[in-house]
Length: 76
Image (cartoon, rainbow, N blue to C red; front, side, top):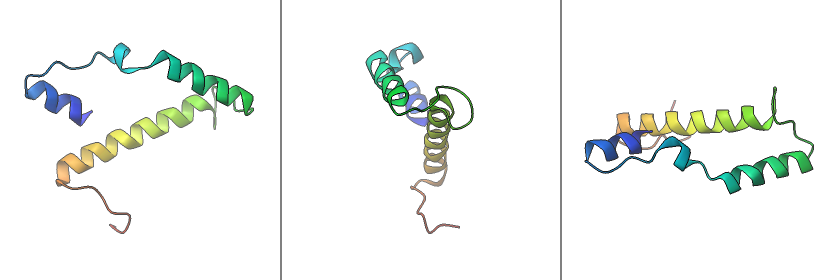
């Protein structure tokens, strides 16, 4: 999220959200989840895990941008 904002501020074209999602990758993730017996929705499902990972990544990017460095696992 921070990268997109800095691209906009730099005058570069931002990627539209629909273009940022690879349909083939989504299909592969769904197929792998179904083959592994993972639910697509609900607690512990694919959607919940993807949402968690995307949010964690975005928050990490925001912290890195704010602090000017990546967080170390040893940071309190």
